[in-house]
Length: 386
Ligand SMILES: NC(=O)c1ccc[n+]([C@@H]2O[C@H](COP(=O)([O-])OP(=O)(O)OC[C@H]3O[C@@H](n4cnc5c(N)ncnc54)[C@H](O)[C@@H]3O)[C@@H](O)[C@H]2O)c1
Ligand SMILES: [Fe+2]
Image (cartoon, rainbow, N blue to C red):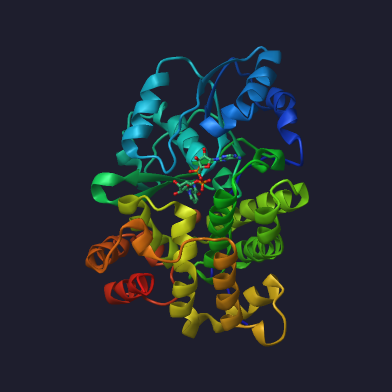
């Protein structure tokens, strides 16, 4: 048995309401939360088109809460974009922020919350525990399954000039309430279902093999792996299958809880420059890298990958590390996730700079169970240029 770490900790959202149609409970739950007069809804165009912003505003109105709406959060938000959105609402007396959408909307909601109460620029908040004061209370309602951002103290910022993405990590980013309603994910297009589902799976597996893995994060990681393995293909093939959508949303939340207790590792570190410089969506970058990084890590995590294989329900000669890697490769083919960096305009000449940028993501690289050098990172990127 692997020895336990001496100390470990876990922290997440204090209240979660879940189930099909649970968005309809928001107004009622808010009343018990805190007196609110004026809310800000931070969201994306897809949520507006599907009527979820209206539905949220109506519930607020019924409780006498006025609301402002930001409905144009960009995917993979940059520091400049976050600053501009925040400036739009500064001084308007908001006492609650509702993040409604994919990880990009939730991360921006979390950041606006603390930007409005701190005299700090978003770039001063990058890193761990840099946010000085608590923010305006937030409610987070995910529409992808997903980032798990609704239960993590993290928000990811894209920095195009540094060609990188960096996290803000602070307990002040945790919400007061999470609403987990699979109806919000019903119209999520196939390509996003695939990429965001693989992001969630990556959170779970990386948390389980991280050097910071512990009994609490392990429990969430294995349950996340179990749920996602059994539902990702079904949610992709038939997006209206609410049972599969609900299990994906739970799997994604558990993945977020796992990474909160433990942390992601080299897959995420190598993915950040692909997002920061070449705009490859986060979930796509992760799924491309995942089998190759697991192959690199395999010599030191064979036993752990055996547990993963069991949680994935792999049978017979597939119930081992190689079986896990083969299954991930098969999923990425069935989910039509690109496997070649060239399709994103990347060539061999870009590889050394990508590897250098990934090595700078020390917060995540140090969680990787096998030390990765810049040469190792280059070799992994080159495998995706075959
Ligand atoms: N905070 C964290 O813990 C954490 C963890 C992982 C990733 N992230 C970050 O989250 C961001 C990615 O979030 P994401 O993968 O959820 O995607 P996203 O929020 O960027 O959304 C992707 C696209 O899907 C659309 N969309 C979202 N939900 C939809 C729905 N239900 N129906 C139709 N369209 C919908 C959005 O409008 C957008 O165009 C990245 O910036 C990533 O780095 C954060
Ligand atoms: Fe992620």
